Image (tube, rainbow, N blue to C red):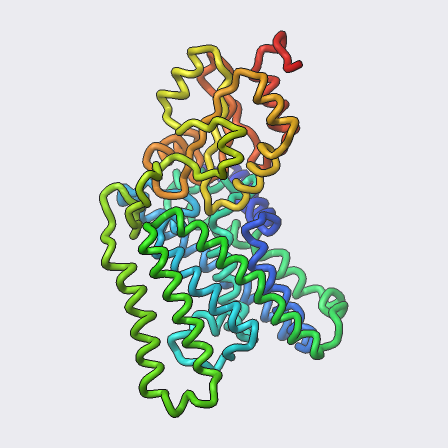
Length: 433
């Protein structure tokens, strides 16, 4: 492809990465970056710039590794897209443990000088270049469920090209994602505006532990929809054991019972995680890359919305044949491609389908609503995304009766955008009264 033909996807990748900083899924990482910025107030100008470079390196290298992994798996025949790792319960458990340890570190329950088994968390929470680098890594891990404007098109294009093009697009996305903090560290006046170091820094760091705990709650909510009740209970048990383990490290009597308590607690925690990993072998229908069987009664492509939402809106399970058949009946069709781990999807759904205006219009118009849930790996949903050159959610399609190709709505959805698309797809002579 010519260089001019590549400029558009590269620009989209950079803008998508830049806008990803405004997506809700990145908010938990802001706690780490705010803490980092407060620590920069006592550093020299060169140290601040090195911190920005280290963070950027963490973001860019993580995205390049993710691009390489995703490209390799797709070349091997796996039908995966952006955020695929969050379809694996094992990866979710790793994130739960990581964010729990980060929160405990912010509360001061353990410091950087901890055993090597806690190294990943120590690196994300410590000061210095290593801490900045791994906070960039953590930014990519937690940002991967989201898809910002311009980003979906760029990723879809990248994964349809050769490896060099894929790497280049993800590199530009990494630069866009890291650019706000990177540029901030190169503006001396911005860092100089921060208050002088003091006790407030410790209090702020402690307060920032609570967004981390909120993230753990969100991750556990998603995990509860991916695994059986027994598996979920084992993870909760492992978290409890981890908390006891960290508490024991702070106690004055720990040396006296060191040879008994620590092995017992470690054995219980590791045993819970090992049972979680091996006692529930993946089935052929479960999540790729280490998925577990889903709870009974949960269909793979049906969203688990609340009882109130189910009553207000009659969502149907997405099936391409059902969409076509419904169109032939003369109905307008709206398809929502979503996932429980996609925070942007959930925000859009709450804003749009929590609107009284939207609910009133849907109640008096003949509109069929389909939900394609990608929380767990689903070949039907993946194939539908690929048909529209997408490898990520959200994706919103509005089908007009008798028209095969739908209108693709923006990834940031509002009631006005939805209702305007509904008007275009509906018969103008039969408005809602």
